[in-house]
View 1 (cartoon, rainbow, N blue to C red):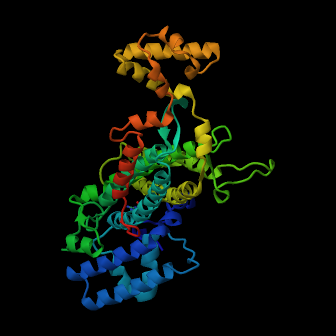
View 2 (view 1 turned 120 degrees about the vertical axis):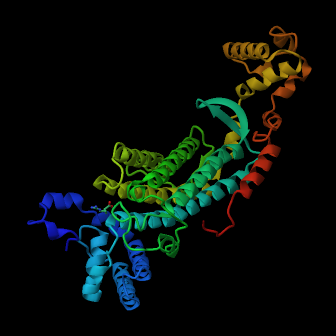
View 3 (view 1 turned 180 degrees about the horizontal axis):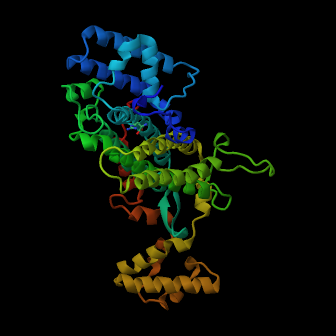
Length: 460
Ligand code: ARG
Protein backbone atom coordinates (compact mmCIF):
# COMPACT_ATOMS: atom_id res chain seq x y z
CA UNK A 1 0.00 0.00 0.00
CA UNK A 2 1.12 3.52 -0.87
CA UNK A 3 -0.32 6.67 0.61
CA UNK A 4 0.07 8.62 -2.63
CA UNK A 5 -0.38 6.42 -5.72
CA UNK A 6 -3.29 8.20 -7.47
CA UNK A 7 -1.33 10.54 -9.63
CA UNK A 8 1.08 7.97 -11.04
CA UNK A 9 0.80 5.52 -13.90
CA UNK A 10 3.63 3.35 -12.59
CA UNK A 11 5.06 2.53 -9.17
CA UNK A 12 8.46 4.02 -8.26
CA UNK A 13 11.58 2.20 -9.39
CA UNK A 14 12.87 -0.32 -6.91
CA UNK A 15 16.05 1.65 -6.22
CA UNK A 16 14.08 4.82 -5.48
CA UNK A 17 11.74 2.87 -3.26
CA UNK A 18 14.65 1.46 -1.29
CA UNK A 19 16.24 4.88 -0.92
CA UNK A 20 13.05 6.44 0.36
CA UNK A 21 12.00 3.72 2.76
CA UNK A 22 12.26 4.71 6.40
CA UNK A 23 10.40 1.82 8.01
CA UNK A 24 13.72 0.20 8.96
CA UNK A 25 14.31 2.94 11.50
CA UNK A 26 11.04 4.81 12.01
CA UNK A 27 9.25 1.65 13.13
CA UNK A 28 10.87 2.52 16.41
CA UNK A 29 8.31 5.31 16.66
CA UNK A 30 5.33 2.93 16.46
CA UNK A 31 3.98 3.64 19.95
CA UNK A 32 4.18 7.41 19.42
CA UNK A 33 2.65 7.07 15.96
CA UNK A 34 -0.36 5.32 17.44
CA UNK A 35 -0.60 7.86 20.24
CA UNK A 36 -0.59 10.81 17.83
CA UNK A 37 -3.14 9.09 15.60
CA UNK A 38 -5.45 8.50 18.55
CA UNK A 39 -5.22 12.10 19.64
CA UNK A 40 -5.79 13.24 16.08
CA UNK A 41 -8.92 11.10 15.74
CA UNK A 42 -10.26 12.80 18.86
CA UNK A 43 -9.34 16.24 17.47
CA UNK A 44 -11.12 15.46 14.18
CA UNK A 45 -14.25 14.46 16.10
CA UNK A 46 -14.09 17.62 18.19
CA UNK A 47 -13.79 19.60 14.93
CA UNK A 48 -16.89 17.89 13.55
CA UNK A 49 -15.04 15.89 10.88
CA UNK A 50 -15.77 12.53 12.51
CA UNK A 51 -18.79 11.46 14.50
CA UNK A 52 -18.29 10.33 18.07
CA UNK A 53 -19.06 6.77 16.98
CA UNK A 54 -16.48 6.93 14.19
CA UNK A 55 -13.91 8.31 16.60
CA UNK A 56 -14.55 5.50 19.04
CA UNK A 57 -14.19 2.80 16.39
CA UNK A 58 -11.04 4.46 15.14
CA UNK A 59 -9.50 4.74 18.57
CA UNK A 60 -10.35 1.13 19.39
CA UNK A 61 -8.86 0.06 16.07
CA UNK A 62 -5.72 2.08 16.73
CA UNK A 63 -5.38 0.44 20.12
CA UNK A 64 -5.41 -2.97 18.45
CA UNK A 65 -2.84 -1.78 15.91
CA UNK A 66 -0.72 -0.49 18.76
CA UNK A 67 -0.83 -3.87 20.49
CA UNK A 68 0.06 -5.73 17.31
CA UNK A 69 3.03 -3.42 16.70
CA UNK A 70 4.24 -3.83 20.28
CA UNK A 71 4.12 -7.65 20.06
CA UNK A 72 7.18 -9.69 20.87
CA UNK A 73 8.63 -10.69 18.49
CA UNK A 74 7.69 -7.59 16.51
CA UNK A 75 5.81 -8.16 13.25
CA UNK A 76 7.85 -7.94 10.04
CA UNK A 77 7.07 -4.65 8.26
CA UNK A 78 7.79 -3.74 4.69
CA UNK A 79 5.88 -0.48 4.24
CA UNK A 80 7.36 2.82 3.12
CA UNK A 81 7.26 4.20 6.66
CA UNK A 82 5.54 3.77 10.02
CA UNK A 83 2.73 6.13 8.94
CA UNK A 84 1.87 3.83 6.05
CA UNK A 85 2.08 0.83 8.35
CA UNK A 86 -0.42 2.23 10.82
CA UNK A 87 -2.87 3.30 8.09
CA UNK A 88 -2.62 -0.12 6.47
CA UNK A 89 -3.10 -2.01 9.72
CA UNK A 90 -5.93 0.27 10.77
CA UNK A 91 -7.70 -0.45 7.49
CA UNK A 92 -7.36 -4.17 8.26
CA UNK A 93 -9.00 -3.51 11.64
CA UNK A 94 -11.82 -1.08 10.78
CA UNK A 95 -12.08 -1.10 6.99
CA UNK A 96 -13.08 1.97 4.98
CA UNK A 97 -13.34 4.25 7.99
CA UNK A 98 -9.55 4.18 8.28
CA UNK A 99 -9.43 6.25 5.10
CA UNK A 100 -10.86 9.25 6.96
CA UNK A 101 -8.07 9.43 9.55
CA UNK A 102 -5.57 11.41 7.42
CA UNK A 103 -8.08 14.21 6.80
CA UNK A 104 -6.34 17.57 7.08
CA UNK A 105 -2.99 16.29 8.26
CA UNK A 106 0.21 15.28 6.51
CA UNK A 107 3.07 13.00 7.30
CA UNK A 108 5.04 16.20 7.66
CA UNK A 109 3.31 17.24 10.88
CA UNK A 110 2.53 13.66 11.91
CA UNK A 111 6.08 12.30 11.73
CA UNK A 112 7.49 15.27 13.58
CA UNK A 113 5.00 15.00 16.40
CA UNK A 114 5.78 11.34 17.00
CA UNK A 115 9.51 11.96 16.78
CA UNK A 116 9.38 14.84 19.26
CA UNK A 117 7.35 12.73 21.69
CA UNK A 118 9.85 9.90 21.37
CA UNK A 119 12.87 12.13 21.91
CA UNK A 120 11.37 13.93 24.88
CA UNK A 121 10.64 10.62 26.52
CA UNK A 122 13.96 8.97 25.70
CA UNK A 123 15.83 11.99 27.04
CA UNK A 124 14.54 11.10 30.49
CA UNK A 125 16.45 7.83 30.31
CA UNK A 126 19.62 9.61 29.26
CA UNK A 127 19.28 12.12 32.07
CA UNK A 128 18.71 9.31 34.57
CA UNK A 129 21.83 7.54 33.32
CA UNK A 130 23.85 10.76 33.61
CA UNK A 131 22.59 11.20 37.16
CA UNK A 132 23.64 7.68 38.07
CA UNK A 133 27.16 8.38 36.85
CA UNK A 134 27.21 11.69 38.70
CA UNK A 135 26.16 9.92 41.87
CA UNK A 136 28.89 7.30 41.46
CA UNK A 137 31.55 9.99 41.01
CA UNK A 138 30.30 11.77 44.07
CA UNK A 139 30.34 8.65 46.25
CA UNK A 140 33.94 7.95 45.27
CA UNK A 141 34.93 11.60 45.71
CA UNK A 142 33.53 11.65 49.23
CA UNK A 143 35.86 8.74 50.11
CA UNK A 144 38.93 10.61 48.92
CA UNK A 145 38.68 14.26 49.81
CA UNK A 146 41.95 13.98 51.73
CA UNK A 147 43.83 11.58 49.47
CA UNK A 148 46.68 13.58 47.94
CA UNK A 149 47.72 12.76 44.40
CA UNK A 150 49.83 14.47 41.75
CA UNK A 151 47.80 16.81 39.58
CA UNK A 152 48.79 17.30 35.95
CA UNK A 153 48.67 19.93 33.25
CA UNK A 154 49.92 19.05 29.77
CA UNK A 155 50.02 15.50 31.25
CA UNK A 156 53.11 16.77 33.13
CA UNK A 157 53.37 16.73 36.88
CA UNK A 158 52.04 20.03 38.17
CA UNK A 159 50.76 20.44 41.74
CA UNK A 160 49.34 18.19 44.46
CA UNK A 161 45.58 17.88 44.54
CA UNK A 162 43.22 15.57 46.37
CA UNK A 163 41.77 12.69 44.38
CA UNK A 164 38.22 13.92 45.03
CA UNK A 165 39.09 17.09 43.14
CA UNK A 166 39.96 15.04 40.05
CA UNK A 167 36.74 13.07 40.25
CA UNK A 168 34.64 16.16 40.83
CA UNK A 169 36.25 17.71 37.78
CA UNK A 170 34.13 15.18 35.87
CA UNK A 171 31.05 15.67 38.02
CA UNK A 172 30.46 19.32 37.11
CA UNK A 173 30.66 19.00 33.33
CA UNK A 174 28.16 16.16 33.62
CA UNK A 175 25.96 18.43 35.69
CA UNK A 176 26.00 20.99 32.89
CA UNK A 177 25.34 18.17 30.40
CA UNK A 178 22.26 17.32 32.40
CA UNK A 179 21.06 20.91 32.11
CA UNK A 180 21.67 20.85 28.36
CA UNK A 181 19.76 17.59 27.97
CA UNK A 182 16.91 18.93 30.03
CA UNK A 183 16.79 22.07 27.89
CA UNK A 184 16.80 19.94 24.73
CA UNK A 185 13.95 17.93 26.17
CA UNK A 186 11.96 21.09 26.81
CA UNK A 187 12.61 22.27 23.27
CA UNK A 188 11.46 18.98 21.78
CA UNK A 189 8.22 19.06 23.75
CA UNK A 190 6.24 21.28 21.37
CA UNK A 191 3.58 20.11 18.95
CA UNK A 192 3.72 20.55 15.16
CA UNK A 193 0.38 18.70 14.83
CA UNK A 194 -2.12 20.79 12.90
CA UNK A 195 0.53 22.29 10.64
CA UNK A 196 -0.52 19.93 7.84
CA UNK A 197 1.91 19.65 4.97
CA UNK A 198 3.04 23.26 5.54
CA UNK A 199 0.01 25.56 5.41
CA UNK A 200 -2.03 24.50 8.44
CA UNK A 201 -5.16 22.40 8.92
CA UNK A 202 -8.34 23.48 7.06
CA UNK A 203 -10.60 21.97 9.76
CA UNK A 204 -11.06 23.69 13.10
CA UNK A 205 -8.83 21.28 15.04
CA UNK A 206 -7.87 22.66 18.41
CA UNK A 207 -4.07 22.47 18.28
CA UNK A 208 -3.69 23.38 21.94
CA UNK A 209 -6.04 20.63 23.05
CA UNK A 210 -4.33 18.17 20.72
CA UNK A 211 -0.94 19.09 22.15
CA UNK A 212 -2.07 18.80 25.73
CA UNK A 213 -3.73 15.47 24.93
CA UNK A 214 -0.26 14.32 23.91
CA UNK A 215 1.35 15.78 27.01
CA UNK A 216 3.14 18.47 25.02
CA UNK A 217 3.08 21.84 26.77
CA UNK A 218 3.33 24.02 23.66
CA UNK A 219 2.32 24.25 20.00
CA UNK A 220 4.68 25.54 17.35
CA UNK A 221 3.48 28.96 16.29
CA UNK A 222 4.12 28.76 12.55
CA UNK A 223 3.06 25.89 10.29
CA UNK A 224 5.93 26.32 7.81
CA UNK A 225 8.45 26.32 10.64
CA UNK A 226 6.66 23.46 12.39
CA UNK A 227 7.24 20.99 9.54
CA UNK A 228 10.67 22.31 8.61
CA UNK A 229 12.60 22.89 11.80
CA UNK A 230 14.92 20.32 13.32
CA UNK A 231 16.63 22.64 15.74
CA UNK A 232 15.38 20.65 18.72
CA UNK A 233 17.08 17.56 17.28
CA UNK A 234 20.28 19.54 16.81
CA UNK A 235 20.12 20.69 20.40
CA UNK A 236 19.81 17.12 21.54
CA UNK A 237 22.66 15.99 19.28
CA UNK A 238 24.81 18.89 20.47
CA UNK A 239 24.13 18.04 24.09
CA UNK A 240 24.91 14.41 23.27
CA UNK A 241 28.14 15.29 21.48
CA UNK A 242 29.33 17.49 24.34
CA UNK A 243 28.41 14.78 26.82
CA UNK A 244 30.29 12.30 24.65
CA UNK A 245 33.38 14.46 24.72
CA UNK A 246 33.11 14.76 28.49
CA UNK A 247 32.78 10.99 28.82
CA UNK A 248 35.84 10.56 26.64
CA UNK A 249 37.87 12.76 28.97
CA UNK A 250 36.75 10.78 31.98
CA UNK A 251 37.58 7.62 30.06
CA UNK A 252 41.05 8.87 29.17
CA UNK A 253 41.75 9.66 32.83
CA UNK A 254 40.56 6.21 33.85
CA UNK A 255 42.71 4.55 31.20
CA UNK A 256 45.79 6.52 32.29
CA UNK A 257 45.21 6.03 35.99
CA UNK A 258 44.81 2.28 35.55
CA UNK A 259 48.16 1.82 33.76
CA UNK A 260 50.94 0.13 35.74
CA UNK A 261 52.92 3.37 35.36
CA UNK A 262 50.29 5.45 37.15
CA UNK A 263 48.59 2.70 39.12
CA UNK A 264 46.28 5.15 40.90
CA UNK A 265 43.31 2.87 40.34
CA UNK A 266 42.64 -0.74 39.50
CA UNK A 267 39.51 -1.50 37.51
CA UNK A 268 37.30 -4.17 38.93
CA UNK A 269 37.39 -7.54 37.16
CA UNK A 270 33.79 -7.13 36.06
CA UNK A 271 34.72 -3.89 34.28
CA UNK A 272 37.96 -5.12 32.69
CA UNK A 273 38.62 -7.38 29.73
CA UNK A 274 41.33 -9.85 28.81
CA UNK A 275 43.56 -10.46 25.84
CA UNK A 276 43.19 -13.47 23.56
CA UNK A 277 46.98 -13.75 23.39
CA UNK A 278 48.54 -12.22 26.50
CA UNK A 279 47.28 -14.01 29.61
CA UNK A 280 48.31 -11.29 32.05
CA UNK A 281 46.31 -8.46 30.49
CA UNK A 282 43.51 -6.57 32.23
CA UNK A 283 42.39 -4.08 29.64
CA UNK A 284 40.19 -1.02 30.13
CA UNK A 285 38.19 -1.77 26.96
CA UNK A 286 35.02 -0.23 28.41
CA UNK A 287 36.62 3.14 28.87
CA UNK A 288 38.46 2.92 25.56
CA UNK A 289 35.16 2.28 23.79
CA UNK A 290 33.53 5.15 25.65
CA UNK A 291 36.42 7.35 24.51
CA UNK A 292 35.95 6.06 20.97
CA UNK A 293 32.19 6.65 20.96
CA UNK A 294 32.78 10.39 21.21
CA UNK A 295 33.62 10.18 17.50
CA UNK A 296 30.22 8.96 16.40
CA UNK A 297 28.41 11.24 18.84
CA UNK A 298 30.19 14.21 17.31
CA UNK A 299 29.59 12.78 13.84
CA UNK A 300 25.85 12.54 14.43
CA UNK A 301 25.67 16.25 15.22
CA UNK A 302 27.76 17.19 12.22
CA UNK A 303 25.71 14.90 9.97
CA UNK A 304 22.41 16.58 10.78
CA UNK A 305 23.87 20.09 10.77
CA UNK A 306 25.22 19.39 7.32
CA UNK A 307 21.90 18.00 6.10
CA UNK A 308 20.05 21.07 7.30
CA UNK A 309 22.43 23.68 6.03
CA UNK A 310 21.05 25.48 3.00
CA UNK A 311 17.65 23.75 2.97
CA UNK A 312 14.75 25.92 1.90
CA UNK A 313 12.08 26.47 4.52
CA UNK A 314 9.19 24.05 5.12
CA UNK A 315 9.50 20.30 4.46
CA UNK A 316 12.13 18.75 2.20
CA UNK A 317 12.67 15.02 2.04
CA UNK A 318 16.24 15.54 3.24
CA UNK A 319 14.67 16.05 6.64
CA UNK A 320 13.99 12.34 6.90
CA UNK A 321 17.69 12.12 7.73
CA UNK A 322 16.90 13.56 11.17
CA UNK A 323 16.08 10.28 12.87
CA UNK A 324 19.01 7.92 12.54
CA UNK A 325 21.62 10.25 14.07
CA UNK A 326 19.31 10.89 17.01
CA UNK A 327 18.59 7.19 17.52
CA UNK A 328 22.28 6.43 17.31
CA UNK A 329 23.18 9.13 19.82
CA UNK A 330 20.50 7.86 22.19
CA UNK A 331 21.60 4.24 21.87
CA UNK A 332 25.25 5.12 22.19
CA UNK A 333 24.75 7.18 25.32
CA UNK A 334 22.56 4.54 26.93
CA UNK A 335 25.26 1.95 26.22
CA UNK A 336 28.18 4.04 27.40
CA UNK A 337 26.85 5.76 30.51
CA UNK A 338 26.20 2.60 32.57
CA UNK A 339 29.70 1.35 31.78
CA UNK A 340 31.23 4.62 32.95
CA UNK A 341 29.10 4.39 36.08
CA UNK A 342 30.03 0.77 36.76
CA UNK A 343 33.73 1.36 36.23
CA UNK A 344 33.82 4.37 38.53
CA UNK A 345 31.63 2.79 41.21
CA UNK A 346 33.78 -0.33 41.49
CA UNK A 347 37.31 0.91 40.80
CA UNK A 348 39.83 0.18 43.52
CA UNK A 349 41.57 3.42 44.50
CA UNK A 350 45.24 3.07 45.47
CA UNK A 351 46.24 5.90 47.88
CA UNK A 352 49.56 4.10 48.43
CA UNK A 353 50.41 4.46 44.76
CA UNK A 354 49.28 8.06 44.77
CA UNK A 355 51.50 8.83 47.73
CA UNK A 356 54.46 7.08 46.08
CA UNK A 357 53.96 9.23 42.99
CA UNK A 358 54.34 12.50 44.89
CA UNK A 359 57.67 14.24 44.34
CA UNK A 360 59.15 17.56 45.33
CA UNK A 361 58.82 19.11 41.89
CA UNK A 362 55.07 19.24 42.56
CA UNK A 363 55.91 21.81 45.26
CA UNK A 364 57.97 24.18 43.10
CA UNK A 365 55.07 26.62 43.05
CA UNK A 366 54.83 26.36 46.83
CA UNK A 367 58.53 27.20 47.05
CA UNK A 368 57.89 30.34 45.03
CA UNK A 369 54.94 31.17 47.24
CA UNK A 370 57.14 30.74 50.30
CA UNK A 371 59.42 33.43 48.90
CA UNK A 372 56.42 35.64 48.17
CA UNK A 373 55.56 35.37 51.87
CA UNK A 374 59.12 36.56 52.55
CA UNK A 375 58.58 39.65 50.45
CA UNK A 376 59.64 38.72 46.92
CA UNK A 377 57.44 39.72 43.97
CA UNK A 378 55.99 36.55 42.47
CA UNK A 379 57.95 36.81 39.19
CA UNK A 380 61.23 36.98 41.12
CA UNK A 381 60.16 34.17 43.42
CA UNK A 382 59.25 32.10 40.34
CA UNK A 383 62.74 32.68 38.87
CA UNK A 384 64.48 31.71 42.12
CA UNK A 385 62.40 28.56 42.58
CA UNK A 386 63.07 27.63 38.96
CA UNK A 387 66.81 28.04 39.51
CA UNK A 388 66.68 25.91 42.66
CA UNK A 389 64.91 23.08 40.83
CA UNK A 390 67.24 23.31 37.82
CA UNK A 391 70.22 23.13 40.19
CA UNK A 392 68.79 20.06 41.94
CA UNK A 393 68.19 18.38 38.61
CA UNK A 394 71.79 19.03 37.54
CA UNK A 395 73.23 17.84 40.84
CA UNK A 396 70.93 14.85 41.17
CA UNK A 397 69.61 15.91 44.58
CA UNK A 398 66.19 16.80 45.94
CA UNK A 399 65.51 20.34 47.17
CA UNK A 400 65.06 19.35 50.85
CA UNK A 401 68.62 18.02 50.72
CA UNK A 402 69.98 21.52 50.08
CA UNK A 403 71.36 23.30 53.11
CA UNK A 404 70.12 26.73 54.05
CA UNK A 405 73.45 28.18 52.90
CA UNK A 406 73.07 26.55 49.52
CA UNK A 407 69.53 27.88 49.22
CA UNK A 408 70.62 31.37 50.22
CA UNK A 409 72.91 31.46 47.23
CA UNK A 410 69.71 31.66 45.18
CA UNK A 411 68.01 34.18 47.45
CA UNK A 412 68.76 35.66 50.87
CA UNK A 413 65.05 35.43 51.60
CA UNK A 414 65.29 31.73 52.45
CA UNK A 415 64.98 30.93 56.16
CA UNK A 416 64.90 27.79 58.32
CA UNK A 417 61.18 27.44 57.94
CA UNK A 418 61.64 26.56 54.25
CA UNK A 419 61.51 22.93 55.38
CA UNK A 420 57.76 23.39 55.88
CA UNK A 421 57.31 23.78 52.14
CA UNK A 422 57.93 20.07 51.54
CA UNK A 423 54.52 19.00 52.72
CA UNK A 424 52.06 17.85 50.06
CA UNK A 425 49.02 17.98 52.30
CA UNK A 426 49.81 21.49 53.43
CA UNK A 427 50.18 22.53 49.81
CA UNK A 428 46.71 21.23 49.01
CA UNK A 429 45.27 22.72 52.20
CA UNK A 430 46.47 26.20 51.23
CA UNK A 431 44.27 26.14 48.11
CA UNK A 432 41.26 26.91 50.23
CA UNK A 433 39.32 29.25 47.95
CA UNK A 434 35.89 28.18 46.78
CA UNK A 435 36.51 25.42 44.25
CA UNK A 436 40.10 24.87 45.38
CA UNK A 437 41.65 21.54 46.26
CA UNK A 438 41.93 22.14 50.05
CA UNK A 439 40.11 19.28 51.79
CA UNK A 440 37.79 21.77 53.50
CA UNK A 441 36.94 23.43 50.21
CA UNK A 442 36.43 20.05 48.59
CA UNK A 443 34.10 19.03 51.39
CA UNK A 444 32.04 22.14 50.71
CA UNK A 445 32.17 21.36 47.00
CA UNK A 446 30.84 17.87 47.67
CA UNK A 447 27.96 19.37 49.63
CA UNK A 448 27.17 21.70 46.75
CA UNK A 449 27.37 18.75 44.37
CA UNK A 450 25.00 16.65 46.45
CA UNK A 451 22.49 19.51 46.36
CA UNK A 452 22.35 19.24 42.56
CA UNK A 453 21.36 15.56 42.59
CA UNK A 454 17.71 14.70 42.07
CA UNK A 455 16.02 12.63 44.79
CA UNK A 456 17.20 9.02 44.64
CA UNK A 457 14.61 7.43 42.37
CA UNK A 458 13.24 10.51 40.63
CA UNK A 459 13.01 10.71 36.86
CA UNK A 460 12.86 14.00 35.04
N1 ARG B 1 9.40 9.60 6.60
C1 ARG B 1 9.20 10.98 6.39
C2 ARG B 1 10.11 11.84 7.27
O1 ARG B 1 10.56 11.36 8.28
C3 ARG B 1 7.78 11.33 6.68
C4 ARG B 1 7.35 12.53 5.95
C5 ARG B 1 7.15 12.22 4.52
N2 ARG B 1 6.62 13.38 3.89
C6 ARG B 1 6.61 13.54 2.57
N3 ARG B 1 6.18 14.66 2.13
N4 ARG B 1 7.11 12.63 1.79
O2 ARG B 1 10.44 12.95 6.94
